[in-house]
Length: 120
Picture 1 (tube, helix red, strand yellow):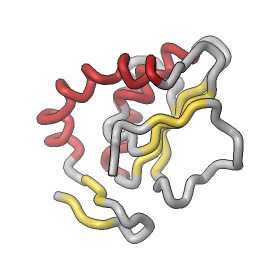
Picture 2 (cartoon, one colour):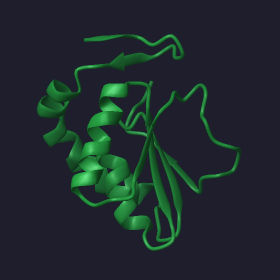
Picture 3 (tube, helix red, strand yellow):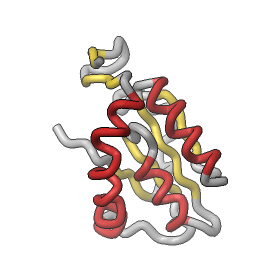
């Protein structure tokens, strides 16, 4: 199920389990390419906008260590819950927050790299 979230003009997906099952195997194959093109390096602080089930931010967390951080945001609480569970299982310190691209809950210039798998 999807619908516009009151804080975003975009579409928010709430069926995290079905999304993960259908799209997860495909989207994971693009993580390395996205992070390579973004020039992610150890020590970077990275933000993944529209993280969904959290794959890209989790992959980034391995590249930014040591000394860096990886944070994923998504407007869907269900997606963030799934991403947090995935990070816990991987013993990762990747941080996930419910937030929208239109209202980032961070100060300016906090991140060295911002990535998103999404396009408009």
